[in-house]
Image (cartoon, rainbow, N blue to C red; front, side, top):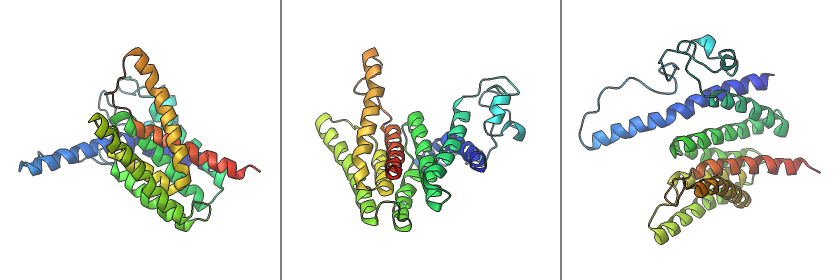
Length: 268
């Protein structure tokens, strides 16, 4: 029960990260661009992961504490704003529920250990990155780069993770594989085939899971990406120039590889 409640709370915070981090980055990029042009940026309302308080996207009414209880408030309000009755996206409670499910899963696979906490953080970070990339085609360095270093640190700290050598080779190999694909695709088509954030994400997954995991991660991501793109191509809504959130598929491949590999390790 404690794991479920904690997971719901972490899921609620993850919703804030998913929603606000891209906005924070856009504001910072705009401010930096204005500084380069020697234009004084206008004063903006403070905006970060803590402020301002959560509000309804439709009527902008501040969400009261009683209406901000993870999962429960959405159910009691029947998915609508208390003030204007506007629909509240079902994704919010789903992310909160995912936080609880992943917490229970981590404890089931790795027990009440520091390793379970580390892998839970990895899974939650992958969930955040998957949804941010799906929404904005961004994979923020603020998440991917710390994941690389944390994965390398985990390799030194825990015996159950890949060896430090596997982690280092995984990080380097993960980056270089997609970097090489990017440039090969650009030389042939004169178009960018993916963003640089994908390189860093696969480097992070390589650091956490080791170089042997890179192939299954890429295969799963590619198969899911094809399954995503083919229906749109048949309908004519997707073509070669349509951006595909490949980072979302890499996150799924990383999570499946982590969980499935652990399942195999536990199976006699």
